[in-house]
Length: 256
Ligand SMILES: Nc1ncnc2c1ncn2[C@@H]1O[C@H](COP(=O)(O)OP(=O)(O)OP(=O)(O)O)[C@@H](O)[C@H]1O
Ligand SMILES: [Mg+2]
Image (cartoon, rainbow, N blue to C red; front, top):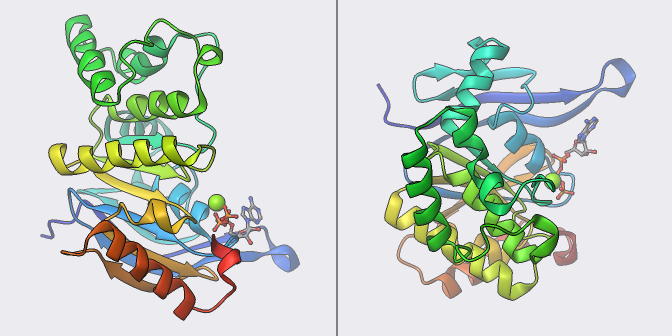
């Protein structure tokens, strides 16, 4: 038995068919242990979002196996998969995906309401998570009344409120200014350290990636390199990420 939370074995993804077929992921294998904060980096079009979507069960692989704890994702039918997503996974997208007709509180509570959890538990959780993300004074506002950074923190609270085993974030800081981005990244990494949340984050930004503990680089659909932060400071790791990106070749502006 392995203690991996996520096991990815020889995963491939081909979009389209025949002459239009395009292989976006090629033979991807790696494991993720509970409590890891992993970044996925690579040039535009290298397959980062495809990988995240396949692992997050939003899309299915053409080949290979994905295990989350003891469950093999491909063996679950649509109902089981929806249930699995609801109970075990959290998602943070670049464009927030908040519902405009619901308040911040209602948006955050949505996953718990769908899972039919007790009201007292929901209230307690919303109070603690919004305090941790510094949006506890905004609970009765609507998305159009708050800033982009506050929307993204709302989306992060919604992703985390059900205490998912695994959180997937695709360019979560892409639409934020640098102060809001730093703020979100600090809160995510604090959560990773204090609550042992397991997070996978796609980013093309070396600064955002420097908050991770480990980074997988993908190039043309293949895993090409892997680096660990270990005892480096965030600034030292940032430099190592830049060095890795330049050693992988490709123009820096392809990536940053
Ligand atoms: N639905 C699709 N049908 C066909 N090809 C697709 C589809 N989605 C993505 N692709 C192709 O697969 C490749 C990988 O796309 P993907 O979105 O995973 O890249 P990415 O690394 O996330 O890029 P970016 O940094 O620009 O977001 C690209 O060449 C893209 O054109
Ligand atoms: Mg992408």
